[in-house]
Length: 275
Ligand SMILES: [Fe+2]
Image (cartoon, rainbow, N blue to C red; front, side, top):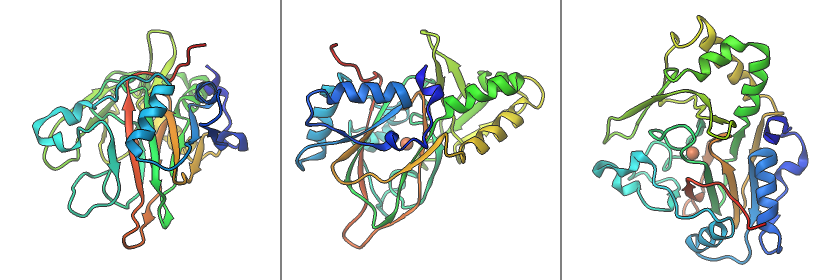
């Protein structure tokens, strides 16, 4: 997989694809294969839902995916195809509606590893200050670890390694699974998350392996080869492989009446083009 050799220090990584170009979908598919993500500059301003619909249609992503966590009566307020991510003191969602930073995670807390393959974040308005979106090439870091410390890698592959639980006050649900796995095509996939939803099972895998593996990943997530911070501007969409990258956000400040606003859509498919 090309993404295992990606270097996020390369300035070409964050260069946007112009959606008005006829081969824009091909460029997006190429960038996703090479580094796990693509930044796309959409044409004229317009309603975010329409932008997401035309981008997802061009990438043949199918219908948006509703995460398992949002299929309960208690969480149905979050079950829209497109989720607004902006600060809202009336809302208690721990990730969407605060100006705090977000530590590394993949989307889909209850979903099986690899189920949500694509995330799109469409920027309506950037923060007044801060609020960069962070990407971590956790798969490439894992591939490096597998070479250096196979026992630590084995612990991260254990189906008992990582429990994630909902931190939405209304509902108490959780799911256990591996941190990394290999899919049906033989490709690595990730569920690497390191935030308040996590409970690590340090008895999973070879003794000491999970401690070492986690320490390695935490260090690697600060390595600019594997970590990228990007500021999305209004009208830009970040398309990324949620099964191949972990992501997060830096804290931010809003100006009154001018809140940072992203719209998120999730898909079970990966972007493809007809040729
Ligand atoms: Fe997320």
